Structure formats: structure tokens, C-alpha cells
Length: 95
Image (cartoon, rainbow, N blue to C red; front, side, top):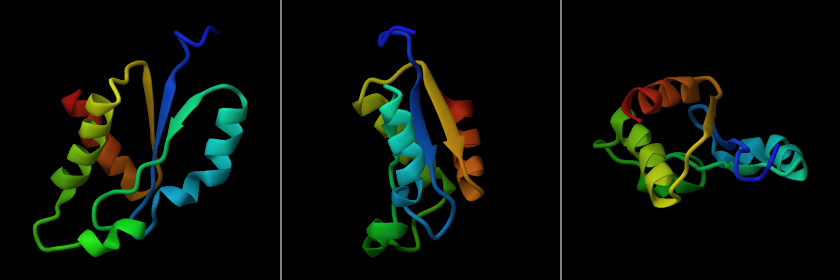
């Protein structure tokens, strides 16, 4: 598969984790030539200092929608673990 047609992976962690949980999977995919993003959602993981009462599921969905827009991504494979599955469902509905 050419680099132009290869999918881009966005791996979304579950609640109370961060993008770091995907390190091993991301490394394997990158070694196979894929582009992989493992963002940490607002208020979780290493971004826990941003946690506040206004953060909702919509915040997490916006995190990923904005990543897709800012990085100008297409041909995306969204993969979510646990609560991340809820997030990617919301993202899929909006893109």
C-alpha cells in the first residue's frame, strides 16, 4: 500500500489513562510504516491539571475532531479502548 493511501491511526485511551497506554501498539504500527496519533484527552493522564467541571464527553470529542482538522487528516482509523469507544463513536458521527 502506498504511503498516500495508507490509513492514519488515531488511538484513544480509556478513562483515567493517557495516550501513553498505546506506546507498544503505536510503535508496532509505526514500524510497519503507518502514521499513528495517541492523544491524551483533556483533563486525563498527563493533562489532568486541566480537569474541571466544564469537561464533558463533548470536550473529548472536540479534542479528536480538532486533531483531525489541525493535522488535516483523512483515511482515518479510529480505535478506542473502553471509554475511548464512546469518544470515537461521537467523533465518527461528526466527521
